[in-house]
Length: 215
Image (cartoon, rainbow, N blue to C red; front, side):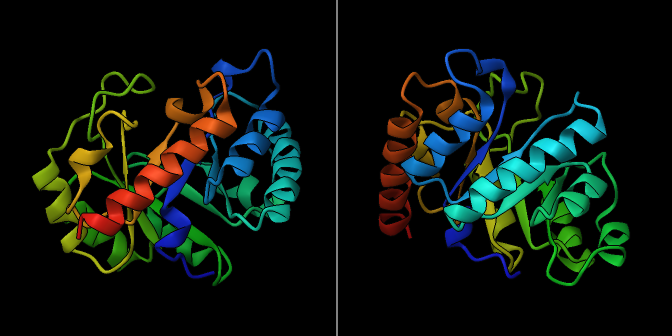
C-alpha cells in the first residue's frame, strides 16, 4: 500500500490511560467518525496474544471507515492481525530488517529527529516518517525536541511523506505552517478529549486549513 499525504493528515495514536467512560474501541470509533485518516494502535504493555486479538477487532473497525491501521513496534502482531503496517522508533527493529520480512504492500513508518535519520529511513524502505517532538508532549515528557526549522529541513530532505508529532493541538498547530509536513500525529489532543469525535473534527479542519495556506 502506498502511503499518501492524505493518509497522514490526522494520524491518531491510541493511549489506554484515557479510557473509562468509553472503552478503547469506542474511543477509536469516535475518532474515526471525527475524520482521523490513520490509526496507530499503541499497546506497549499488552502481551502479544492480547495485542493481536485487539488489533483484529480494531482492524475490522478501521476497514469500515477505509482508514489504515498501524501497530506500534510489534511487527509480528501487525502481520498476524492483518493490520496495514507497523511504526518503529529509533531504538526499535531496523527498517531494512522489517522490509525484508514483510509483504511488499506492508506499511513501515519510522520516527526521525534528524535529516540523517530521515534519509536513512527512506533509503531503507520506510513509507513515511514521524518527525518530532515538535512541542512538549504529555505522552513522552523526556522526548528530544526539534525546532520548526529542523522539521522543515527533515521534510525537504526526503520524498516520502512526514507527519509532525509531539504535543500538537489547536493552540500551536499554526506554528507548523510551511514546514512541508503532510499531517500531524496526535495522542492526547484526540483521546484525552471529553468529546473525541468533536476534537478530531476540529483538528482535521484546522490541519486542512494549515496545510492549504501554509505552502
